[in-house]
Amino acid sequence: MRSTRSSAKKKTAPITESSNDLENSNQPVDHRKKEDLSRFKLQPKQKINSKRPHVTAEYDESTSPKKPANKLAGKTLIENKPEHWEEVLKNLREMRKDFDAPVDTMGCDQCPDEAASPQDKRFQTLLSLMLSSQTKDQVTHAAMLRLREHGCSLLNILNTTDEKLGELIYPVGFWKTKVKNIKRSSEMIRDVFNSDIPNTVDGLCKLPGVGPKMAHLCMKTAWGEITGIGVDTHVHRICNRLGWVKSKTPEETRKILEGWLPYDLWSEVNHLLVGFGQQTCLPVKPKCDTCLNNHLCPFSGKQK
Ligand code: SF4
Image (spheres, rainbow, N blue to C red):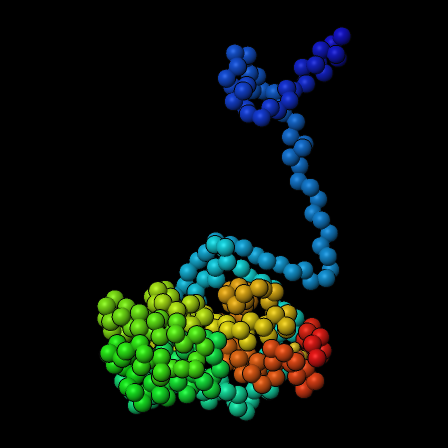
């Protein structure tokens, strides 16, 4: 009998959803009783696969004036660096060593008039970037030369009719929309930004027709500040082909790439990849046979 009573005493009430149930009841609570905590025991660690796993670490956003945080759905992502990325980069530099792609001689950084004032040069840089979307470098460069000849200062563009501006920039892609965006952006620069282009990514993105890609490239070229990787259609395509990212949009590519690529390469990688995309890793029928990365690229030979 003694042992039965003893074991009955040891029995504990099952833990209910809320400990408040016990506290609120009229039954006296015996705080000396110990609950069975075995179910809270730590489970043994699972064996880690010896193959290098793909890890995505998430932590709260933090900011730094030199290296901006990479936000994706409110989180900062650090992706594992892809295998062989340094060798791939070395090969890219080798393939691009002659700097003879259209972007090298007619890219947006080549469009402003060197003799113009710093303020006008920054404005011209912004305009060349706005013209360049969905447009070949050759066409953008030619349009900028016409604008420069016309007089490419903020005041002069504001005083130019839409019709004339359209004539000057035609045949850049979506030229009618770009005329409107250039005129509205110019008004904002005059009225809100004291007649100079904004000097932050946020400020630039407030201008009609300017998105993050353009803003980061503009910060680099106009203000000499690296705030992010400029990811255009070439960079987006090649990064996915090389397995450097797995993404659906250029903006997603930028955020993932910034998660693992060292900051001091952010400026170089845009230029390298854009020229590489113009000459070798073409959108259709990439020249994999002559590519130094064909033994490292998962996409090699998949599209002939
Ligand atoms: S192997 Fe082909 S797909 Fe891969 S990077 Fe080179 S050109 Fe592009």
